[in-house]
Length: 157
Length: 157
DNA sequence: CCAATTTAGATGCATTTGCATCTACTGCCT
DNA sequence: AGGCAGTAGATGCAAATGCATCTAAATTGG
Picture (cartoon, rainbow over the protein chains, first blue to last red):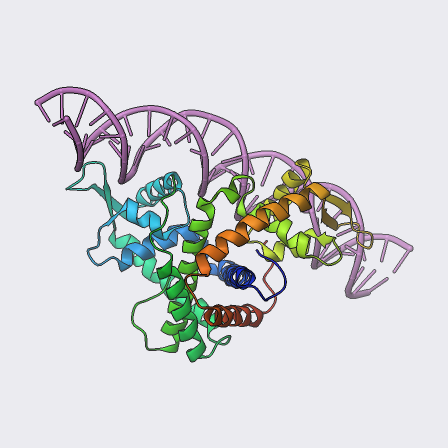
């Protein structure tokens, strides 16, 4: 993604991002080759996962969009598909007639848990042998810090 | 992508991956909102970038596919588009009649450099303020280590 | 040396994605 | 209240993607 040496701050940042990005691609490649992605694409699972983590159970389409690397329209249609498959339910937001609230159906929650278990297994089989627990904690700390420093995400138009 | 606590090795790995993945999504979101992606999509730029880094200048389609999160057929068509736009040139591999070798055209190299400069600026503006140089180096070390520990990538069918 | 298997890429076709636009609702400002 | 700008999602349509399959070239085994 960036350039070649390793001296200036600009270069360092670019190489850091490049490395992060490539690692993400490599891990994702491995994950996608497993059977867990047979039933649900990444983004679809990601929506179920995010909903499963939501305390109130209901989440605005809007906020969902912040988590996912998808345009607003694509997310709209993705959710439409999930609804058609009976995995999520929707409801117009009570305080805002424009908004849509989503939650998992029982079936959706079940599927999320099932796939989630597979993913956790796969991930741990990939990351576990690669980095010590201390290294994993440090990596998590750094990526959390990076994400938190970015501030609010730009809404995709 | 994973679960919630923070004790078992399996959980730690899952949470680490989740954090890495979310950071990647967040940074990518920011990058994509910039003007640099107006001319070329991520995967398209990535191909030009990878070619620009290739010592011999020529690269097998095959090997390109390892770098990119795309199916073989999608990459095939992506390259076709790049060729049509005059950004890359192709040639049948001299030692293997099935293979295809690619290289940047002058125009392709020019465009890669131009977009590359923008990206490096954008990235440095995002990552630079978020992490100290030492943290960036450590992050790079960890993501490199992770990627190198994964072994050869599974070919996408 | 030839048939059978494997590998690299290309292609048909259905699905997914994104951009631009449209509609409906909110909130503000006078 | 009434109009006006801004926001949340939906939709038409073209482009990109993935899966299955196909072709051609290389490799293997007899």
